[in-house]
Image (cartoon, rainbow, N blue to C red; front, side, top):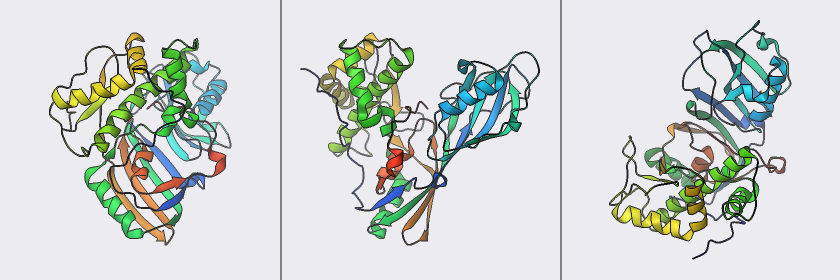
Length: 337
């Protein structure tokens, strides 16, 4: 069996009935506020400067480059826990490796798209994934549709969570990173840039996970535990992050996962040969403290927190359909949380 071409992403199914409602997302940057929940706070001493930064209209990589220039270091000396949205107001931590010399006061740095709220020293560099999660405040404008249906889905999400899909930003513009990853793993193209190679591997791994989760929902298995499932620490069933070794599920769960792998043989075989190891990810994402209000008839405000690696778009997709202004449709860096 040969793999399909991955030129467009499939429309993965929802867990709950569609509300039929729609809204505008990120009409203004302040409509999407993200606050990083740090894994730890700086200790006050060490070879790295940690910076608490609020950015508005800038992506994380751009801010990292600006910090490197201001501190007189290379960009690889700047660390952060995760990439955050550009068209938003986001608060996150950065680190700069500066073991010697005077400590520059970067709180005095002036830039129209970000500001340094505080700085302190710490013993280690921030690396991708070094965060507990993120807290969101999202304003949805031009809400149209059945308010009762929206409320019903909000209550369902609050009670039982949402499918823990990887978000569209994981897959690049129009899902192009998955097809590039397939071509790379099939040796149709050669990718020399390690960063690009990592992005493509991340995209195809996430795609296979989403396919497993989608199949469970299509088969009416949302919210159910299958014979042979591997559970996480919270007691939730998990899906495969593909790599070397056998899947750790058994029975019905293993059969379902192996079936998806067979249909995506180039991706799964390629990931094994690329050196990735088998891992697991929860199939359910549970937004914490989900609350909502209607300040106006056509405006809905949501607030909630998600653990690291979970996507706010997965929450929104279960409530209503959102569209963003055209200025937001350019390709953004993949989110590596």
